[in-house]
Image (cartoon, rainbow, N blue to C red; front, side, top):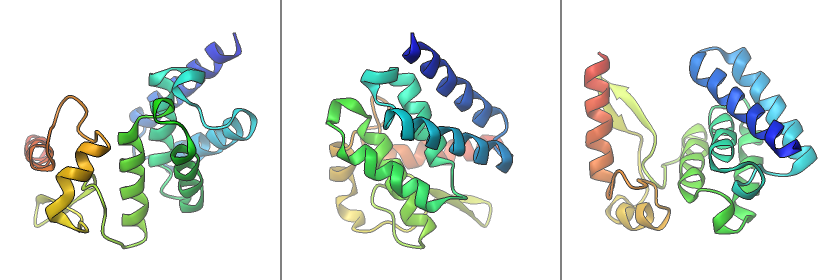
Length: 162
């Protein structure tokens, strides 16, 4: 019964994050609530709360740019878990987010920015081997097999939002 409530709480937090994407107060509140959940239960794994709520936990951590140390803590917890307990692509995304926050080249190419009204990937370390890292972490899931496919998709989305 507890996990049902925890699962629901995480999903509601994710929904609020997505509704109020530019509201820093929502992101701060969600990060504080996720920290309390982690303190009590550990990282919300797939086994503990289900894939959707575990993914919601990652999204909340991903968007906690105001608290780099918290993001690092979440990444460390996720990396220590068995592979079946957390989506490996979430580790890749959070790794890149943290690297970009530290003005370092990203590893998986998940983070973009706008240059002259065009969407471009943030600097990527060892670009020639990105697809190997991409596939190892299943970054594209069932949607994109390569970074290039992902980049084209991101650029198309950006064009439609202009």
